[in-house]
Length: 168
Image (cartoon, rainbow, N blue to C red; front, side, top):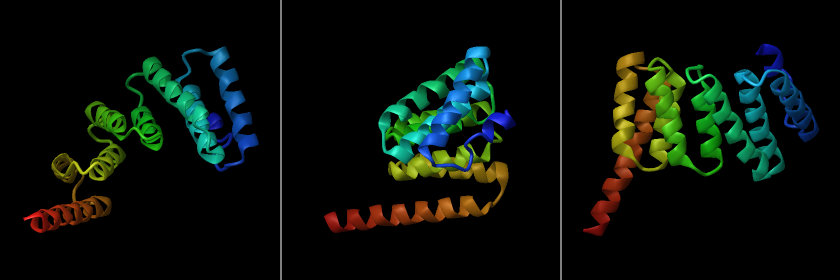
């Protein structure tokens, strides 16, 4: 895992990213159930798509993450990475499913809560965002990121209240 992760970790150079994708593909050819290789190839494909502004690698990234989940359904963080890719490709509702799937699988995964809350807030689903903030606060205490989420929620609710007042 750590060797694969380091291949193109700090690079946004398309040539380096393509080279890393090739290495991950070779690892998958050797071991078709190698979930780390699927995850790293998917994440690198997503980064390549962002770097080149090409959606094709991003779509392949999603299939890699889904295969990693199929191979290792309980592996930590796979659904969060999938959610990031889904949100980055304009599918926030599917991203929420991935983030909240991670929360169901691993209720102690703080990052999954924060990402689900952020996506819910962007979709203006303030009620569910509040529920997730409350659950995360109960589980992890008063964390700085959760305070930021709560402040964003208050701001969103104030904007809704102001809009309702203007419509009266």
